[in-house]
Image 1 (cartoon, rainbow, N blue to C red):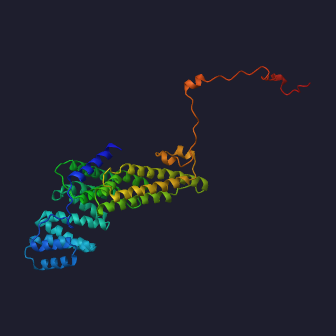
Image 2 (image 1 turned 135 degrees about the vertical axis):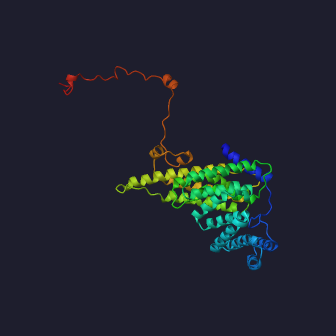
Image 3 (image 1 turned 135 degrees about the horizontal axis):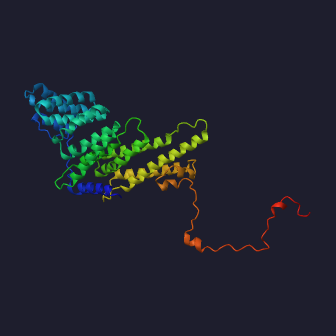
Amino acid sequence: MSSKIISLLLTVIFCLLANCTSTPEPVTKSPLDYPPELEAVHDLIVKRKTADARLKIGDYLNKAENIHWYGHAYFLKGFLFELDEDYGNAIKFYRSAIQHGSQYESRVEAKALYNLSFVYEKTDARDRLLVTLIDLMKRREYFDVLTGQVEIPARLAATYASQGRMKEALIFHREARQNFKDMVRNQKFRANKSEISKALYYLGLATYDQNKESFTDLIKKLEVGQKYFLASAEASDSTWSEKSVSRLKALYDQAWGQVLEFQPKGFDHDPLARKKHQHRQQLVMASSLYDLMYLLRAEEFPMSDVNLRSKAIMDTTQAWIDRIEKFAIGLSVGPETIRSQKIKNKRLARYVEEEQEPVKINKEQASQKKPSPPESKDEKQELPAKGEIGKDPNL
């Protein structure tokens, strides 16, 4: 196991076993102060009594005289629409909260931007999501250290990756993962386990898929992100750990589908050569996927209480490994394929016929080798003279 993997394991285990609290998180994750009327609305939302909350907030907006609190009311109303999956109205009221907060309270503006970013993520509005996250990077002071220093830059990295802008994605991903390492080394750090799982989930989303993503790009992103999905699954028993498991399975299924569907270009005049090229490339692709799965299995966290969600990842990878091995056996390729296309994982290569190498003899053995016995004169056949060739020997 590499030093980077061990470092990640130690930091997360340290955080989970020593430093983290387990207090429940309010639904809105809001540190905002409310007047009594809006505090009652917030409590109703936490209890999932959305119909009652909507009535109360409507009454408040009709009767309230203190305009200072309107931004808080717009924020809560936007959140109610988001819970109902009415994303159009959620966006409308979050924007009202942002506009009001920019004039009266920056904390409201930041929280509304934060929630709005999730609506854009759910509706796959990636351009708007990118702009919103860039704005949030400027307002990280209004959030706790885990959200501001890890989650937000990780989400920004994932959004850049979704647009194929991997240079920017890696810059912000590097910042987020370094901040996470520094944060958990701090003895005063406290965080909810679900929040840790959430931050790790977004660190894994360096694998946020773009439209028509190539197999090579997908494998590169999985190399970066898959250990964070596993860490998220191990960190808590929450919605975020479940999302991590589902996401990783979906990405592996996507990659496996690309292996099966690969079709070479050209070779229309030679079906046999086309089939051989197809199988050769499928073996190379399957080998990359095979290596990733073994790498993921090596990163399983050595924790005393095994999280069933992270165990599900391990069980699934074994099924994938068996599937790839069975697939490799059925490919019509020979040893020349192994030599011309580099296969990193020899465990997969053994499922295709390999050329047997001749036994090599070292110099000492060669020098001690007994010489062949000389031929006897009786056994030695004399060659005829050049002039005699073609003549009847009986004449």
